[in-house]
Structure formats: structure tokens, C-alpha cells
Length: 173
Image: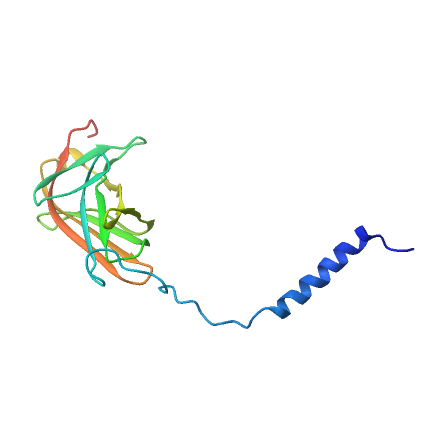
């Protein structure tokens, strides 16, 4: 019985799928994850991180001793959500952030959180860095140090720290 074109197309497609890989170029080796990555910021190779707040869409860096508001989460818990701006790194990386009291006692930390930064002015930015905070009422008014660190896909590190005062005006206890 003669074959119709509809019966041949799966056979031809199968044969072609076997032949196409044989035509591919040989493996060029591993791809450099940092190829084509450019620095951001004032000086090539310089990296930095700053924390602050957003005034509308404008980033405002914290000054030493500024208040960092502790808020009640929509689904429970209490949080701080500073903004962060980075320079000298690529857009993708892993974020770490921590808060410790001025005495050195840890309050909270996040580590290894995958992020993709947004372009903002001369740097790259995260509008919110959610850090869970327990015992909000007990922490209110306490001086602390807020640290943020980004390790980009090329292994470059941007880090910064600032003294802040935790402030809670919510209802959780």
C-alpha cells in the first residue's frame, strides 16, 4: 500500500531529528558567567551598598541614627523593609541582611536570597528588603546596626552597614 504524505511526515521528522545533532558545532567549552557583565556606579570595580527608604520613587539613604520602622505583616509577624541600593555589581546575585543590637546581640538575619536588582539612577536597587523581626515592642527605641550584602553572579561583593534606631508603632506584642 503506498504511503501518503501524512504517513511519511512523522518518519521524516524522526530521521531529521537524528541528523540535526550531527550538524551542530562542537562544544565550545564552559560559558564564562561574567562575560559581558559591566560594573555600575562611579568607578569600575568599586562596589558599595546603602540602605534607606523610598520617598515616592526616590531613594533616600539612611543617616546614622535614623529610625527604621518595624511594621506588622499582612499575614502576621513583624518586619522591617528597608530599601537598598548597590553599585559596582551586576543585576543578579544573592542578598544577605542582618540587624543586631548595638550590644552585638543578633535580632534577625536573611542570607542567600536570590535577587534581581532594578536599575535606578546611577545604581541598582531593591525597593524592599523584607527582614523578619520578633519581639517588636521590646525592640522599639533600641539602637541597632543594619547590614546588607550582595554577592553578584561574578562573585563581587557590595556591602554596607549603618547605625539605626528600631521603631515600632504597631499592635503586636
